[in-house]
Image: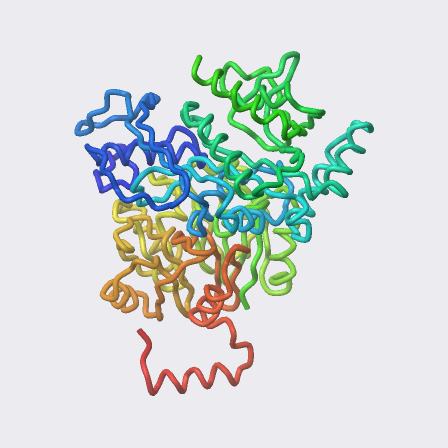
Length: 297
Length: 245
């Protein structure tokens, strides 16, 4: 006769839907707002740019029990913070499949990101005891960090995955002699992060880059690997990638080995990565288009 | 000696492996590096067996065992069970148990003499544990967490528990387990001890994020540094004079 599990204080009254880090994060958010009935104003931790938005996040179906009220909507207060050493585990979880399933110095890479407190943003909840990281965005100058093992491995990965002969030359020069002028854009987030945050995230990043490089804003070409779906048409998992793809100088696609949770609609699509190089002059246009895109949708 | 390693970029080596004094189970991974790390350390002493449980790679969290036996959940397939029975030494009893809490590795922490279990475990399961593993079973919590198998890791010589465990709890657990315990972390501040490491009486494997401080704590509490017989005698002399908590 099956036993009913006794109700102990469960760490997560709302159960995650899938076994993945972002599902756990979402469950944590939902839990946090079952407990907190009101949002407290706490002193903001970072002195730099921060941005508070009250957002209504539509929750997926919840496994509610007798004593939990759940009308399907979660109030969430996201805040932007400068990267700190405390965020190590959260950021590392987000970047777990950054280079597909290649084994590389991911911890070193995360340390680089967290060491750069002037450029980069980490999105977390206000007053979250779990310190869960929902999104990370930063730009790393490839020339400045070229001696680090993780950057060398990353360059090797990019050069190995590109099969198009003409692009390899471009890529090699960007990674080699022009590296001082090239920034790697790292942007990763949980799948269901509200898109309203995106324009502000990117604005904050590009502002910080321009402040950090002071007067001299060289042609900082930006490039990053990111994930998309591809079959006949390209479906972009992240909306800003479509805009970047249109503005890019050149780009190429590569197949991904990691397993991703496939939703029903995306069953026929294959997970593909994309590498793009974007000129710095096009960034303001990108920011404008991103604002329009998000505000329209 | 403690070794640092990774399973496919993940530092949670305790999730993908199970180490005891009589055998070692390893998940079938993307690269051979994980398996060879165990092989190079243990090959001559105990068998290192590649396996899956219930078709998954998270074998360390699904099964529980010591040198006398291995308990696997009801989701284990017949082929996996047969493979385990064939590969393990004869004196190790492999038993599949019908228990609702199927992540046995998260619910049970044990060495060759004592086991700590999840408070909601079935009575029959408790009896099977006592029978198959030859241990005394105690239902406990660790720093308020019921998943005792996740938040502590102990061998016949020492144990490491969740960093927020109070002194009173540490004393109580230490008395139950009859080994010295220390509250600490693994993998650069993670409290999920058993996910980040796996240990037996003479060696331990930790995630590569583990800091040098964490590693030295592990080597000292699990008594991994002593390789010479004379060192063991010295330890015995010390224990006659002083007592560990």
